Image (tube, rainbow, N blue to C red):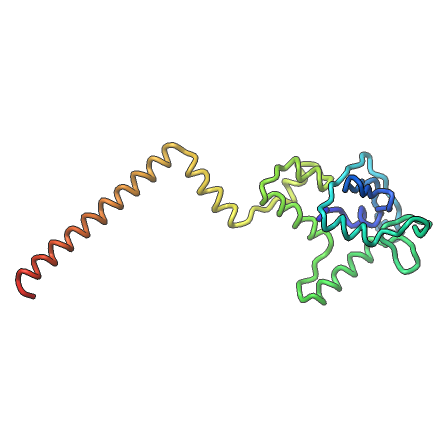
Length: 200
């Protein structure tokens, strides 16, 4: 529901969650160095705050450690030893769970695309969606904006309905169709009437 990058999820700490505001502040992400596979923490140039939906907030509230039980690291998502999760391990496990659920092996990044597409389909603007994902609007347009078939059809119908000329042409076509149908019905009535007078 947040559209966070996997590294941002791995970098979340419990102090980033503000329960009273139902908000999550994204300040950092954990990234894997390609050459050494070492994980380093990267601080964002600017932080962003996400308002959480009630279901997500309830889950985080439920699993949040009570005071005095917060692990020394303070990370929100950790492994069995209490250390923060590696982003590449998250992707691997995510794919395993997808296969176990009977769907194609999706990675966490595909859920990010899904969040973007769903928000755009719901009518939210590029700037609103880009802000939630921590994206540049141009990047969002290039990689995450996919219009589904239903929205394409709706756009065509809405456009036709918004144009005075198209509305006029459509009304004219509908009147012409009604006139044609009435003429056909009248002709059938006349033919049926003649058939009845002939005794057939």
